[in-house]
Length: 173
Image (cartoon, rainbow, N blue to C red; front, side, top):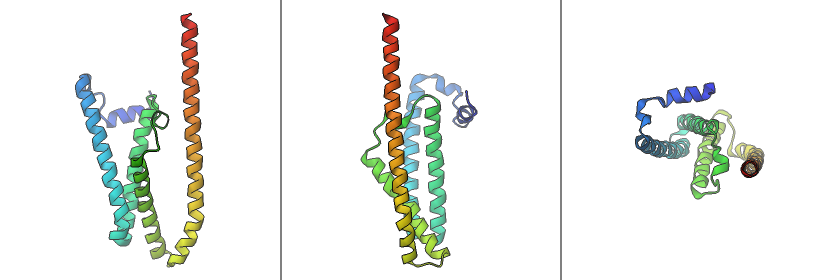
């Protein structure tokens, strides 16, 4: 067991006897998923609103909130992957709720970035547009690379599953 999994088990208190009962564990896992998703959506909405509603201070807080959410999301995905589940290969990522989440991330980071650039950079909206002209293509390129990597992982997972199935069938014969 890796240090990451041991640390995650400690943080989640997963070795508690509470988890010995299957029904309790399943219900608690569902409740935890609902709680995580609620926290995620509340944080995303807050992060998207703060730069516009609370000025420079709100922009800094929005960045902190969104970064904290990203860390938690990566811990969740990382723990699942360490336990043998790659969420990027077992679920469809083109869903409306993910698009809404992406828009909220963009509003939060984008709004905070614009607010902070104009405030600290002493710049104007025109200079921010210049930065966006550079940043947007870079962001889109990163998105394309991410999509290609996901598709490669899906293909590799399918190939591995097919190979395992063939090996299983050959050993049964």
